[in-house]
Length: 175
Image (cartoon, rainbow, N blue to C red):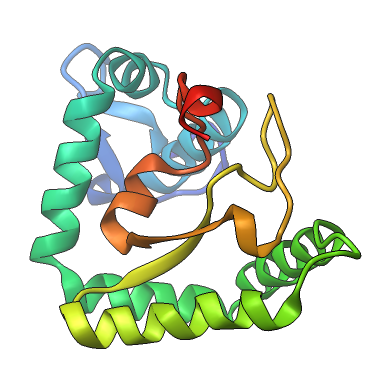
């Protein structure tokens, strides 16, 4: 059979079955169809999944938390591999630069270091991963916080990852 996309002769197994076509198989081979779909999704994304995700953010978060809990080793290996990749290293470098620009001259570096030491102690005490988070995010559409001791808080890792880069509505009354 001949693929009309790549113009090569291939066996019938290389084509998807399609009863609507006269020959009973697609005109493009599976490899060409895969490349075409990948290009389409690179340009347009996955509209149906994106629409569902916008309508059901809580369900998506719950599914992600459940999957992460069931696949801890796999997720750890993926994270380690990503951290060793060029994209992972670039993100770390970018984050460090953002943090460095957000340190005011009056910040007390010893107090900032004490917060990070307290994180280690809290992890050992409670037995869960603890993150040092910025109460006011360093980068946001609304406000950009500083990397100083007054803006650092300790949070369980799962809470920090779920909240992501957001601020809360009554943030200014809480402060």
